[in-house]
Picture: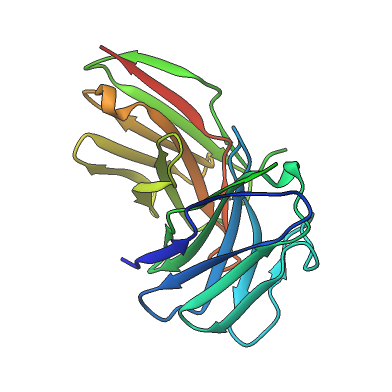
Length: 112
Length: 111
């Protein structure tokens, strides 16, 4: 199974600032996925990150707020921009290998 | 209508009992189905996957899939307090790698 290293594991940020979350996979994968889990809620897909092309965003999520980079087949970043308290969530990256999805450890973000 | 819907919780069972978690999905193009366990403050952990109609057993866990009824379930036998967590049902749709999650069911196993 794929091993995903995600960092930071948690952060407390001031409103109006930005935070970049990194995910490193131990194997090459075509697509990486970014999810958000708001407090008490389930996981919602933010976007799909493909290497060499623009990320594909789900309804309700825009590139200006959540820019994504995918410089190679093992790495991706998600930036949460101009943060507000409503962005306080757990953010998770994921990959699919042999039709099974695996997750990074998650980033618990608190915006104050 | 939610794409993946789980039975409302929370669910409370005594230690040693069978816990039954249910899930329905709306997209008939969904290919694979997963059950994740999530402890508070942790990321989801895959516990079962199922792709074909019928039952799949792994230790104390049994997943059941009925594609005609668009129904997935998870049975936990001999429930333990350590099974207390939120259980998430997810469906892998036609769009490669895109998982849709249910809202989760909180399970509490009391001694």
